[in-house]
Image (cartoon, rainbow over all chains, first blue to last red):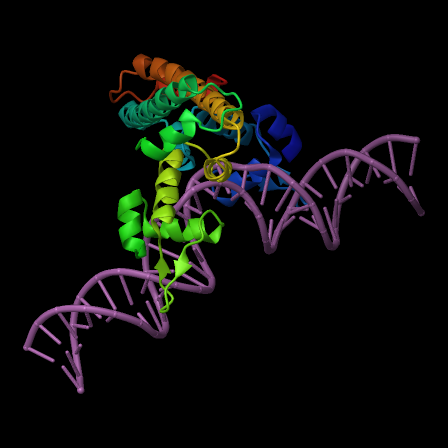
Length: 130
Length: 130
DNA sequence: CTTGACCTTCCCGTCACGGGAAGCCCCATA
DNA sequence: TATGGGGCTTCCCGTGACGGGAAGGTCAAG
């Protein structure tokens, strides 16, 4: 399987797959002409990576998850810890965004948005610490 | 006012202030010894920038907002448009994070987290497209 | 034989800075 | 006066996770 086909299967750009090889997440074999030759196991790893990245895990998290995925004897407690830490990060990020959203939508609501030069949004940004 | 003092006032690292000068957001004068010399107007701009960045605006948004802030004759409609676009981006980002959160917390809930080697989280990542 | 699609490596650009080196400058204290 | 310790300057590299694009090899079809 060449790179384009595995890319379509995994739902990743070819560039990303080359990058994943660069940083050691996958190790596809090479054909005689130098082309990467992906086995079914490579495709499965790439699909796994695509999903894990889609869930927002960092590359280093993905590296750890992939190692746990490959090593069937590992306990699931480690996986759960990684996932729970990531859930914490997601929750924190959502809270930050919601704070921004609250402040900003308040300012937008106070702004008439007409041709008057004085704008409550600008004044809010200038004066309000968040 | 030297850089450290204005940094404390604006709530920004000195490095960030130098960077903002590099990319043309501010233009502080220079003292005879080459030190940056910040006037009150510079401090106000930096405070404005710190708040706008705190609300999640990109640097280029901040550049536009700063121009509008400086140019008192501009209409507030432009500001409102920028802010509303940013609110859209925030809402989109929150939605993405919430989708990740939903999927992942579902998987975590299904995982006993004990010493058994088969982990629903790993299987979920391997099999589920998001 | 040529064309066009595919593949390769390599290098630079992204965004918004942070770290750290090398080297002035200024003030206070011994 | 020497010296020490900050503070200031510029400059360059690194971050995360790739994307764009150049230069060039390879393959299948017509």
